[in-house]
Length: 522
Ligand SMILES: Cc1cc2nc3c(=O)[nH]c(=O)nc-3n(C[C@H](O)[C@H](O)[C@H](O)COP(=O)(O)OP(=O)(O)OC[C@H]3O[C@@H](n4cnc5c(N)ncnc54)[C@H](O)[C@@H]3O)c2cc1C
Figure 1 (tube, rainbow, N blue to C red):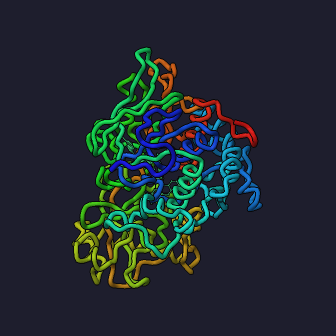
Figure 2 (cartoon, rainbow, N blue to C red):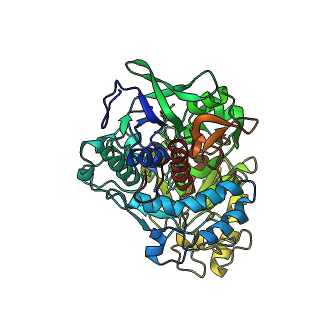
Figure 3 (cartoon, protein in one colour):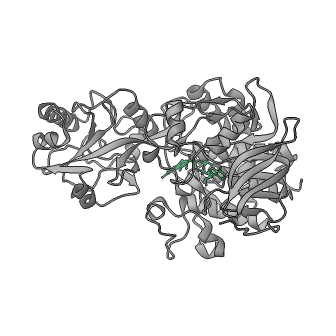
């Protein structure tokens, strides 16, 4: 269904700015345009706004802003620059510098609107590298009472557990995390006069004959539409993680069915449309990876914060520090054959509950009934049930338990990094090493999931889409998972996907419209 929730009437099919997608990046770009009195339309393919951004924790890696300053955590743009350079290197140096320079101004601009407010929350950066903040530097939106959003609240994509089961928002709860970020941006941009259309799937780009992009073609329930853009088109429509054919073509590890994006999004049409105009691409085999607990119907649940148990491959051996940040653990799963599926082996000390955060969660009984988890009185029997050599699994667990007793993981150094310890609950000498010795024992099947692909259109630091010869395509911009990530194959810290999407969307809209974020300017 196509609907207009604010602003100009739908028969006006020309705007200064056309924004494709409605994640955090898209809505940030749209807000910048609307707040600076440019006419802007947000075109969303599905009937809900927010995409994967709405499912997210909404940690935004936006360093050195007034929010970290208020929290008094001692963050700085310069420390963040040192950290990014150490991890990503020089290849995207210009993007890193533009990102770091713009993040504080963007947050100041956003918080000037009464609808938008952030706070710092601890969540460590993901790598031991110079410039790291051990307690983290990501900022998060404050919860938003549903009534503040009024009828618009029904348009925000619900949390993933409710969305996958066809439920809307809980009437009792405020919008939190990703829903709060999307809700706050939506409130701000609609108050500023932006138009939002759902049920409008962009399928192609319009050009003026001279190679300039002047609008989009889209499919709606009422038929095809054309929306013209006077200043530019911003493609911020996520990646192609739900497109099995594109994943196979580009060799993205994992599976479309195991991705965390909403099933009806992330098909990659905007990337394909830009490529048809000669756009260059990069990082197409990359994603923001994570381990996923396999669910009975074939989907997966983003799993992080392992606070007990150990992970083994098909031979019954550990292969990594289970407390690694999720993208790093996912990359370990992809690094060798025989690791998908892996098994999270744990015991009964927590009543058979998974010793990790899994989103969306599913009760153990449902997993056990479906066979995605198994339970046995001995480790040898558990091994037989999952098809792993019993002697190997038993030996691996015995060795792990000696590490738990001494507090030293001689194989993978689990528990030595602040990120791993952030989630730890153990009361032994190393809180990340909890013995697995209380029958019955459990094994949960893990697959390689992702939060979205991160390869896509090549852009310059202003968000302009580049051709294969390096020249910008006039009028065409990209951000978020539609673009090749500034971070390359690295996931530096919590909030990098959304933080970069927000900054480069804002820079794109500023570039195409000449809008400034300075107070009192246009
Ligand atoms: C449980 C969970 C927690 C996470 N937590 C965090 C976190 O705290 N911080 C962080 O930075 N990242 C987090 N992530 C990852 C992050 O949510 C995504 O990587 C990011 O939101 C992607 O943003 P995007 O704007 O590129 O795409 P999306 O947010 O997915 O938005 C894309 C939108 O475009 C629409 N669209 C697609 N194709 C078309 C088309 N052809 N026409 C029109 N519209 C189209 C889609 O339907 C969708 O609504 C998390 C992910 C999950 C699943």
